[in-house]
Every structure is written in C-alpha cells, then in structure tokens.
Amino acid sequence: MVKVNLAIAAILVLFVTVVGLRAVIDSGKTWTYDKVFEETGELYDVMATADDDVWVAGDSFLLHDDGTGWQRRPLPASFGGGLFEHVRFDAVGSSGILLTASMDETEEGESPRMARWDGSRWTALPGLPDGHPVADVRAFAADDIWVLDGDAGASHWDGVRWTAMDLPVAVTALDGVASGDLWAVGYHYPDGPDEGLGLPGAQPATLHWDGRAWRSVPTPEYHYSVPAPEQLAYFTDVVALAKDDIRVYGDHTSIPEDDEPDPAPEALRLRWNGTGWTKLPNSKGACSDRGPWVRDGEHGVVLSASRYLTAGGNCEGISLSELPSADWIGSGARQSLRLNAIAAVPGTDKVLGVGSVEVTHDGSSANRSAIVSLKR
Image (cartoon, rainbow, N blue to C red; front, side, top):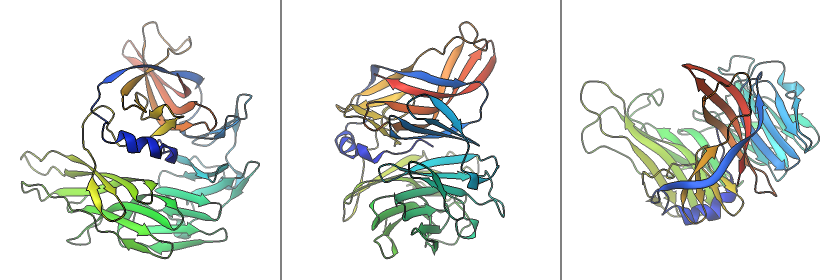
C-alpha cells in the first residue's frame, strides 16, 4: 500500500482542477535500481526520517540504511518469529516511526504487533483490544495513536493503554490534521444490517472525531438512474489537507447477478469545505487517479511507478532504467516495476520506492524484490 505524504497539501490545491486535462509527456525522470535482491521476501513499505535513516519493511525482516548502505535487521523481538504478510510504517512526529505487522488471517493469540522506534530502540505497544485487526493507522504522537479495525471499531492509544470504541458504521480509512480533528470513512446500510460490503445496498459513510466523540457526518447517497438493486457505494480513502479541506474518494458500482448490462461504475470524489460537501472533478486523464501521492520537493508529486505530476500541472511519464546484468536476465528481456510503497527523503529531493521487478523472456518470467530511487 503506497502512503499519502501530507506535505503535498499546497501542491494538490493547485493541481486538482487541472489533473487529467494534460496529455502524458516524457519527463526525463527515471527509476534507478539501488538494490535488487535475488533471495528475499516481499518488500511492503519504506519510511525515511533523514537521508541517513531510511527503513524498509519486509515480511519477516527490516532493512536499514544509516548512510553507509543497506543492512538487514530483525523485526522487534516483541514480534516473535512469525511470518507477517502485511507490514507498514507510520510517522510519529518528525523522527519517530510506528511499525505494524499483521498475519494474513489473524487467529486467536496472533493479533497484530506494533512497536515504536524513537531513533535508538524499538518499544513494543501492548496488543490491541480483543486482538482487533489493523485496517488503517494515524499517529499524532507517541501517546496519541488511532487504529481502525476495518469494521465498526476503533482503538486509541494514550501512552498507557488502548481504549476500544464501537462506531456506528464500518470504516476502513482515516486521516486528520490534529488529534481533535480526525476523519474516518467507509460505508453503512441505510435499509438494513447487511453483513459486509460484498452485499448490495451499501452507501458511503463518514465520521468525525472532535476530541470527545465520533459523530456521523451526512454524506450524499448514490443511486443509478436505471434500476440496479445490486448497487453499492462506499468510500475507501480520506486525505486531510486542512481543517476545511478534507478529500474523500470511493466507488459506486454494482454486483453482476444476471445477463442484463450493468450500469457503468463511477469514482466518488468529494471535498469537505468546513460546512458541506462538494464534488471534485472526475476527469479520466492519466494523472487523475486518486493518490496516494508523495511530494518531490517543490517540483511535483509522484503518483505511481509510472506517473509524475509537476507543480505546473503537467502529467509526465516515469521511465525505468535497465537492470544490472545478471544471469537470470536474458537478452531482450522485458522489465516491469510494481511498487508497494513510495516515500520522500526529508531534506533532499530524493524519492524512494520499494516493490518488485518482473523480467519476462521467451515466455518465462522471474521476480525480484527491489529498492529504487527517482533520478531527476
């Protein structure tokens, strides 16, 4: 999952009305390979607090670069020896890091693990109440961390203990500009208590935390003009740029149930201006996809492995350098890059990505985990 960098706020305000209206052009920017691993697991996330303090998370290990090169590190001892399939970093202040690792299917006694890095050591956090899973995290400080469980539950860490809260709707993403100004988005069933998002009838839902309680914020409902009883609408992402500038994104679609043609799906894009919701432009240009974004200094934002949006609103392509010569790369082989996460390095104009490269040759393919950097 590639994470939103809140420092993009000023740029995004300028970009939002022109995104997708420009053609994709050659930027001259190139992903270059910093490290390719022939024997390692998946690389899930990357976090940098400085040029000499960069972390990468894998399924059962960490990589750290202190300015002298990549060194393999173990996960915190409190995580045990399990194989984790979901690992993420979240910033805690300007230099702290929160590490969260989850099994693919949380079983009894196998709840997600969390630990905080303070610049010198990892400190374990107690397990979440009732072993709740982790769908999203927002950390304002070491004693102010919020976690959503992907259903109708939230947990808050105050530095001493977790407090679990039941929410009136199912929410899967959260963001906020302050500890007393937090937003969570998801879905609910206005016509009845369905079991999950796979069933028809869902409508978008939004909650706001004001420092005292979670309260529902009414959002528009979505219905096709042509009868479609199997339709569902839901929010999947929220980006808090300012107190009066909250962006939410989602989808309105339908579940195929017969041979009749289904209505075309639509992307949901709304902005909260402090008093109400307005629709954001829904253009279909190559750079109009909703985040995540990572800012490249003052020059622009990296949207994905292949798209770059300049501060002037130009949608540019990002190329990929050739892999270094190796015995598993055949002559004329095709290469493709998939990034799981992108992060900017503070104090520099460097952008790092982690994921995997696939090399295809003569009908066969090979995958290798990789760390790449953006060359401008």
